Image (tube, rainbow, N blue to C red; front, side, top):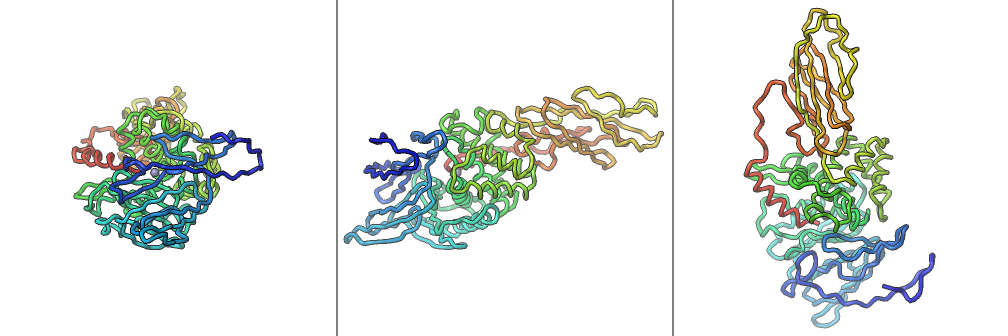
Length: 516
Ligand SMILES: [Zn+2]
């Protein structure tokens, strides 16, 4: 829109915009169905965000989410009297307009969008936590799920309160949706739509998953309002990471998403499978509509980001990492941070910038992380006693370590050689554990930069096995099966991806694609 005259710095103007919106039948996140259900999102002309380099106002893209500035909203909604309404913010007035119509007034502060829904089919439930009133609108036939919605919302609100900071708004409205309006976030209003029918066993925590995810967006999107057009990983990634943490804390690390008929799947495992199941076409940070496909978008900005952040949490330790997250939230709430602002907080709070190259790779390069133990070899020492093995010059790429210095002259000594291989393009420090037949163990470190590294070690007992990252801190490592090798061949454990699993995974992938 062109203004008739320029607005100079420091000046302000008042705009009055008349507009009409034609709602579609629900097909994505907004619309109507059968004239008795309305979900009204992305329905008014939004202002862009004024940044250092001017206005940031991308056009509407089907494949992206949004970006706009914080403001105060006063909205009057006229609806038939029999309709129940849920909206961003607090209802501050309700007037009768006629025998059949009413006007509802809503007020919201420090938000950057406004959405609302109306239907006579809603059943209203109310709960509260801290200073927040939680209002739940379920469609008829779904009333029996109310407890599951509230449990999930209250759990997430508690954890986020402790991890990041309080939820500051007086209300949270959770609404059920029809069609494919699915799970979506708006300030103080979230949708937790049903794609599952009226029966959903407790062991399938899809309701919980959607509620936790969309609630989390109140922090990562609602308050910390990065540009979703340009850097969606910052909100979807931090949010999905928080969702996996919440489910793991609530239901334990194993089977926290699916725990039914002996099938157990955690949210984190699901995210790993999502990344493993798709080739690395795109980097994690890219304009939303520039990804090769929607699937590539979601694998990167949701799932790969979860693996990235979980890796950092486990690398730096939970306490220090939560310090990063809390500082980022505190510093950037009600503002518009970029990736560089997040990484600056990471470096500041962790006290190191030694992983900058890795951060840059993950954000800007398509690719993956995978380190393998390619080969282990053991042989008995044949050289005469007295030779100083440790003084042998190392070839580049080789290293020697000795644990046999104190061995007496007549004791047998074994050599072990381990070849490590970097298969992916991402570079990350590698921790290698060697375990010997006498029960001793030895940790070795490699910066992971070259494509391979050979370690040679002498020890009074034979090497039993070598394993990279045995406690699975580096969740970005896409293949854990190649992380270890034994000297003597052992029967391989049953591979996890049985046909039964594949069925579940496919169903879950399908489900997950409806959560925004
Ligand atoms: Zn989301």
